Image 1 (cartoon, one colour):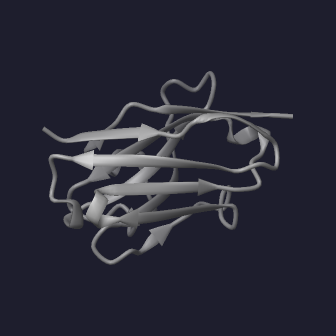
Image 2: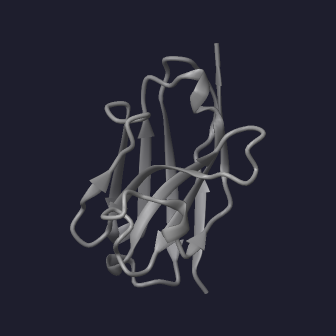
Length: 129
């Protein structure tokens, strides 16, 4: 079974930093794209792409909302993807999820939620003023 486990969320002040981790198991890690998505409070039906990474060649995608502040990285030996979040803003408050796309095209498709096949449970990030 494919499992994705996100961790690292917590309470942080605006302007601060936080690093999330996603540990994957049960898949051919190098063949997948992995993405981070977030669900803002009151938006239970909507998960917006934060960043995606190709596990095979390291290509990445960031939307304008996080570009320059967030960095996604991978450690294939540990089957782990990280999301380093810097200069956090109040609007970054959300439940953050990691997800996997088995064909390896999520980055090319600009990290849409509908491309992802497997989802982990989220980790809550709360940014305070």
